[in-house]
Image 1 (cartoon, chains in turn brown, purple):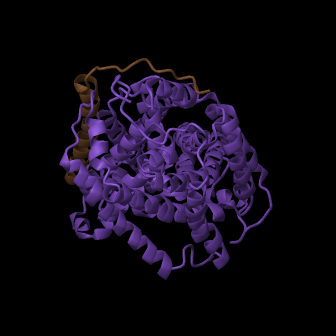
Image 2 (image 1 turned 60 degrees about the vertical axis):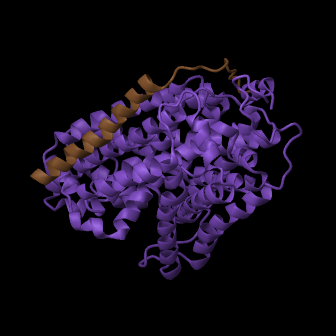
Length: 44
Length: 518
């Protein structure tokens, strides 16, 4: 592979998969745990 | 609406038991055939590595903001697409039914591709296509007729097609949590695992590096081309399942305390993450094929049906342990397509249930049996490929894209609902704050980008007859299955919006779940 292709591959992986990792961490850490009332899910 | 009323409604409509299940279901819908067979070729054709820039811009300025708009509408108004739009404004209900009509049409033909992929899982084991994958697919398998419509059945397609529908009906009849949620929670990890094994196998094939070179070498001059930017916005838009009711429906099933904005980021990046994985796996395999056939990668690079049913069988025939590659690839197609098909059909079921107050099982039968019959009748024949080709093109361009643009403009500028929807997503547990930037992206940037794509597509289809010039479709086919279908879903949609809601349906929304005033 040429250098520019390798760089773009790494940049793509860092941004997209790194963005996914950050989004998951953000959801787990920053999302305020303020549960509402228990909800019924019976799907009648 | 009182608190007890909303609890009753949740009990009746069903819902996802947790944020995790909702996210899996949304990823299951977004990750579909397009991620596997469309993204790699679109990226390669539009600047290679340089395509990453417009792609990321499109994801962050249009894809995720629009996804959050869908989430806000469904989660705030707790209904199917028509009911959510009706609660937003009674005059907007027709938009929801328009989206429902589009989903009905898509489900009819999408199932056929799954049926093909099911057969190819087994064909891969003994490389049934021999040394002529194209001839086998078009001739032996689909028995494709000359352009036109026939009633000649193809048993090899009809049987798996019926099987696909039996599975889909079974999953949907089980309900939102036990059917849709559980299927996604089980199959999405399996899909990731299966496709990852395929990618690793492909990377160790000789020639893989050349394939990756072809995909990722940046062609910076492409960034000056408006068509490249349009391709990026189009890819993001079509692959995220936004704008045609799916995400509204799924969001309405999410718990009220779900962090919708934070979940949206996870879904958006998961979808793109899978596309990147697909790009790596597909082009590594194409690099091998090019080396095996002693040609340039450009000569074997394909997208869509050509990639899956022409190029991959050739790869499977040439590669060591090719059968394993085939089973992994076509199983991935089946799983990705199945969870997407389920989501498309659920949009219709949810709307029918809300409007007519049918039980889950009855609504599933009322909706999916006609879908299955039409699917088998039109796609299980020797002319199925022609019908699929035309309907898919026109319903994507002048169905999904058009309704998305109209909905965004109506919500943002007609009803001026964005501040209220942003406030809803910002409420309570949100980990991401939607400010003015979100309203600008949803109200200006995304509509402008999509209008450009739509106008360009419209001009192309008006000035150039759709299809292969060497084997042109009859004009009546383009008229009926193309323009006619796209127009019919609009007309039927707005007629359905005239049907009265059942007695007792709440057509207003209040934020009462925390015990506030109703």
